[in-house]
Length: 304
Length: 304
Image (cartoon, rainbow over all chains, first blue to last red; front, side):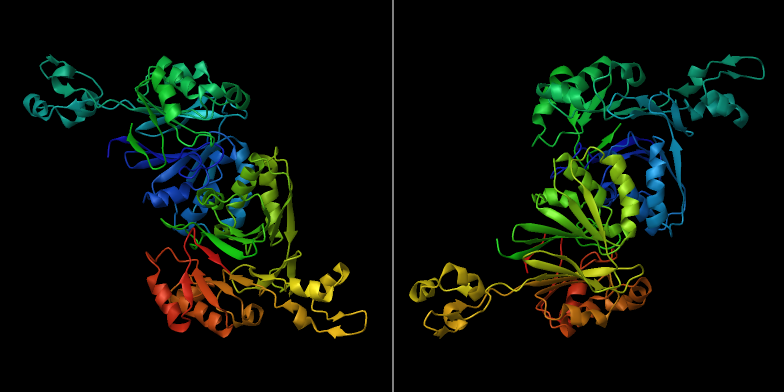
């Protein structure tokens, strides 16, 4: 499974609605799972969507408002009951450990695995995590408490070597890794075979940016430039811009302006205020600025 | 609204299922609401069922396993955002305050109301709460941690005075309250009019007993004797009785035996193990012993 895919587990704002839980998402890439925020009921949505979270080892929490983290203790507890043994790493503002660890100690004393807190500074754009295929960076956002979005950036992939060329030029195994990285092949007689004759372009590396919660902030544009998919909060309509500013949230129009400025391929809006019975107004407002906008809904699954 | 009614907000055991959240219930009586346990997502179910919890002032927590209390912080937080001003009282094992208060301090600093912890000893059968229409008693249960069920006992109601008799005997207003309590009326000439000529029987007082989580325990029978409705956990089938004993839970058959022994009017079973895709086996097993058994499901509403 090469593809990066995103599942929306919850996309409402402060309060849940009839159809939407509070914020949580699951990103899957090459058999690994990453959770972004963990509002109440995230484990319930996983269950309802029949997603096993056994390959979920890293959770990224944008900020410590309850609608983004109240689901953690239930998820952690259930993972223990389901027999998890591997460490679970939670990347968050430093304050989380002091609040969550006492709960884990009390409720999850029997769990056969460890929860490891990896604090980061939400005010800095920094590398939070990397493995062979992925890097995750923080994106400083503008909210009432220290908040960071996350950029999931797939590593540049290797070029595909053309099997017939290996045979034709009798390329030794030891040279193949370098050629996949883009090197030319030098034959024993000194002849140089240029890389483009031996390989085809790699699959493009995918990028996903998550920006919630945040007021309108152009500072994030250089970081999210050109991503395949941007999730940007759109709590309010532009008609509620005063309320949006007061609460450090964005309007749908503002989310679309950021998407346009950053030249992203696709925009998903979410984190809807409970005041909107349906989100068609938010969608229309965003699409007027950035046509490739879609509404998030609980259970939505997208290829990035 | 005279009736006592019960709404099931969640009825699964340790883990949520596709259709059921973890344990929580709402009992309504005469414009007052009482919550029993508060598993994760209780506030979401309230929202989905369009139940406003503005008249919910008392929450009773049976024991401090996560599937019975992880929904508290989300509910408390949302009540604050919705502008609640009246105190919320949580009746529970004494340990809860030490775990929950730091979360309230961190996440709900702006809330305009107070959460008051009323600790009780789950090992004692005691009066926990009373008002003009209701008394709530603890029911010591048999579980892996200190656990209590709850008996909601409506107070004996006043007799109904027959309006025509007030006129006929010219009963003064000052005597009416006593007559409603069962007193005879003494006329000025000394003639005694027996109460049964002046009044009709009151509506019966209702009783609801909640017993979860618990192993089979005959000790609860005298306390729940004759209740209108008993909710008794039935985590397992009798075929899993070894597992039931190990984990201090009950089988459906055992729940029914308790119901029969206590001569209750109706039994609702719940707290299903996630191993059962459907609960028809549990129902059949219980009905073989106690025919007036029903399965709980999320969103179920019953008159007690």
